[in-house]
Length: 219
Image (spheres, rainbow, N blue to C red):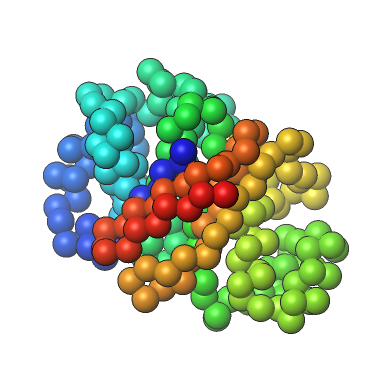
């Protein structure tokens, strides 16, 4: 099973930043990285993703320090549990984390708030393939279709650590043999598109939120 936790960054901004950072179980290097972020919006989003990850780890009974290290491409992983794949994402006041409880290794994860004000045409012209643009056009450039395409691309790019920067390259192509899982959910009055991918099929996903919404989805 893959577990996902989604929280609102506005709620954690009511707390003391340093206190929350120091309470994270992910090692001194990760704490220092957070303290070094200068941009206020970025630092709270980054903290929100790690706070969501910490809540998932507690729910799963993962105790003690879980030092996070980063690969040469910047992909984070647990030093003591390298086969436990996880991912972090944030979008428009939402921060989220996902953990693969089955230990299948690399996990790609993205969540986006479905926002009708996006420049769908401009972004698709810059990042989408011709086939993706034709599909978007066929669907009438709907926001739901756009975000399904976008989160799929981001999750796949994150699965091996390439991240969003890989989408800027003309030679970008998803890795072979990747299984994609997507759903659109609602929480706290927002519609979210959630995408996960890994090399093994994804048969079960449980999504927690810091509100009353919770989803367990079986394929």
